[in-house]
Structures are given as C-alpha cells and as structure tokens.
Image (cartoon, rainbow, N blue to C red; front, side, top):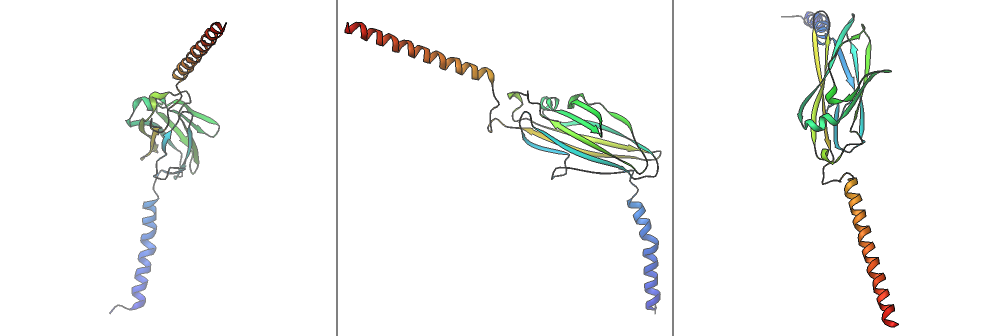
Length: 211
C-alpha cells in the first residue's frame, strides 16, 4: 500500500519538474502581438464607408527573445473589388517615422525591420477612403490582410491581420453628383425664365386690349 506522504510527494515532484517545461514550450514565440482590433479580431472591419471616412489601428510587436531579430511586413489583396482596393489609402507609422503613405495597391514588401532584444515596436495604421472618391465606389467591398513575419537565426513566425471594408450602398445615400445638380439648376432657371416671359406677354396683351 502506497503511503499518503509518498503519494503526495510524487505528485508535487511531477508538477515541479514538468510545469516549467510546459511553460517554456508555450513561451517560445519569437514575437508577441497585441493591438487595437475590431470586435471580430480583424485589424479593420469597416462598414458603410463614405468618402472622407478614416480609421486608426495599432499593433504592438514585442520581441520575446534575448537577442535581436528582424521582421517583414507585407499587404495582400484577398478578394472583392480590385477597384475599391486600389482607391483606399494607408499610412503606416512607427513613432515619428512614416513607413508608408500611399494607396493600398502601391504597397511593397518591407523587409528586415530590426527589433532589439526584449524591446517592442508600436506600429500605427491609418486607413482612409479618399474624400474625392465618386459614385462608382458605392456598394463595393474589398478584403485584404497585413502579414507580419518575424525571423531569428533558427525560426520564422508569421501572423496575419485581416482588413475588411465596404462602401456605402446606393440604397443608403447617393454621393453628390455636381453635373446632375448643375443641370437641374439650369433646367429650373429656364422654366422660371419662360414662365416669367409668358406672364409679361400676358400682361402686355391685356394692357393693349384695355386701350
């Protein structure tokens, strides 16, 4: 029969030996990623965008190792409207440094971004639907993703952050159409001018008849 003291001592020894091993196995990531995300976990999940709308997000990249590493950042269009994707603008900053500021379609792979041992980078993302955008973007949807890949001498670690956007549909509200507005103004002006001319002609004829 196993004595209670020996039984509990064996269990205690098991935890003392194996829990540190399990913790080490769970903490061997090269980087840790945190940030401000949408409720569904996407980096951006934006609905009913109108020209001039913008949103800001942030990702904190923490080096979990005791040595320097590097990481790459890429952007990939997944599906949806290519035209809408090409119209959206993105600015990426790290502190006071602007890493990228252009249309999504102009993004090129950023490589070998350094991250010192036990340090972190705060990367800010500003996504904008340019205010000059016209009616042709109404109701369109596009999906993309930010890809961050970290490297050290022995390992590679990749994380993806989805971007989902859709513009305001035509059933919600029409964007201003300057040509249509001008045409309507001219048409109303012509109608009022003709009506005024008929009124003047009518009054002139009545005056002549009375004389």
